[in-house]
Image 1 (cartoon, rainbow, N blue to C red):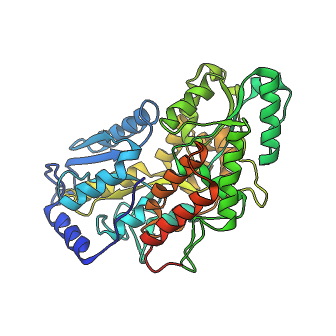
Image 2: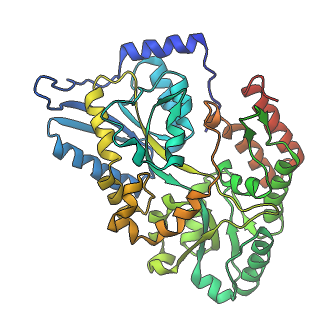
Image 3: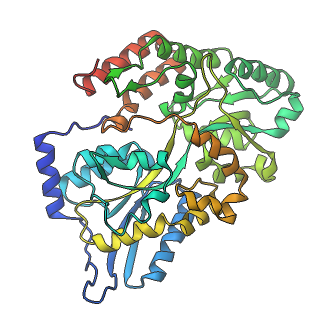
Length: 424
């Protein structure tokens, strides 16, 4: 993620211009005289290429079968590029999609910039009371709803049961136990205990929460990442690497983490339900029963994992709002969410979906559902999605020995105060 843009009169004007110009994609719109939808809906999907994307593309094709005059133009946009790419397209009024899969923290920012269409009272937002309260929270901004929750998630420890059995260890419940378990795994098998992703600060949040810290306190408009708790969390992750309990990499973290775990080179990784489909593709997990999932180990103060997920939002400048609204409704319906759970092990955002057979019988959902219910919410402010860029820089430096935890926390806090003008 990258630094955000503070809303100003200039940005507001550009947003209005973007709305007036509309999407770059040509569309005939919907036929209101006959009530039949038609035209093109361009959808930017940010799901994992090679696994999740195939499923979401297939589901989108199901919408086309129900509405044969609508052409869904599916585009898989790399997650790391999508936030800035959408803002640039919306600001210029050229090339923005009709619908975007928005990470939960992006939605308030896009709404603040004027790039999203309000969905209250539209066909996109059906049975709003059916959505999980914590999933719906990120879709609202200034009293309006700007997105519909698609999936909700959190994080846990994924572990290789065969390696654990060979080493004769149990799943660690605390960071202290994590170090002890990792040492036994190394001594018994020669393998590293944990792969700690070092190029994405989202993986740092569980350790931050575990020490009683947080990025900011929106209720008091205070920056808290550089508090003693934040410094301690930085020390915890540094110690995991320095002690040999964990290995890390400053680049290509996702690919290196996944391949190391799937090939049995490491015994554990911290990840979420979005990684299950890809993990099952690894040679170590041809027998799916070999994959274990447990809560993220607790720190010295608490056990906590971040609440994540994705929403579907409609671009305010779309030339085909009617079909876009219908597409969002289809992709977030109870039936579709159950299908997504069945094929990808992702958690639904609708309460009703948890009664569907595919969801009730899903072991991954059974584990992550209570984790999600107790997950730590991020502050739903426009700048939330931009808090990660400075943190990623300093977090990576700490893990690779380029700076100290104290300096990293201070540098991150200084960056936050520049971004959040007027905050303490």
